[in-house]
Image 1 (spheres, one colour):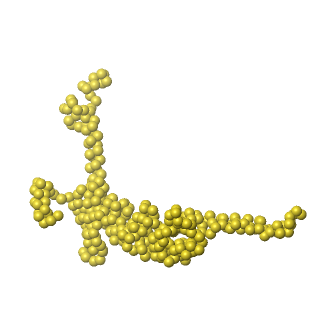
Image 2 (cartoon, helix red, strand yellow):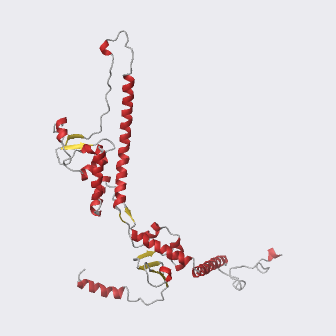
Length: 339
């Protein structure tokens, strides 16, 4: 908005929106919280409650604003609400927002990668165990049968389970298949004429390799512990930049994960200060008296409303003017029952 439009909007709002506003008595209350109750010092702060439910904190520890019109309609309720409130819930009602947490994001990504590959490794270990057992059972010492030729007697070989490896295939159907020599010389990424597929459970590691791996390495390094550590070290460095980290998380998580977010140390420190303020206020006599008075007034209003509901809409006004809401049982009103 340029200067001319801003000036015109300012004049219009001052007349149309705020032209009839007047000063009104403000319902507010403030506290100063400091070391040993003295003015000044380190980590001092002020807490100001204002109607209809706004709590402002400012001072040497920073600033924060909490807003809740129902829970903090009075300063008594505000102190009680903050005193028993969880930090995550309180911060959710504040002007602060969670920040990107690179460490938590890294842990979440690694947890997914390890969980997916774990079952693949377990299945391969079980397959190798069964293969060894079959080999021992098939090649245990035995006497040949009379009709067997000498060359038919062991050792017998059972095919060993295939090792974990990535499979290269041509990028297009019209291309010829790759032989072993071509696969051995193929590096990924960097070739647009081939595509690579990982075994079940290793798709996430292959996506990580395509995102942060070096072009001169083979994708089979995802099956090597040293290669995986190198990929994870590179991944940790890529998560320092928030914007780049979000894009990387989308590529690795399939579009459903945008990184982990958490509250900063400053936000937690502000809630710790508010908890201390609330504890001091709740433990004071002023809060106890004000709370008892509010509870008594609320009970009085409840009973008054209950009595008003019992009053009839028409007639007999002069009979229960002395006690509104109570209908006396007198013979004048119920002659048959009284007789």
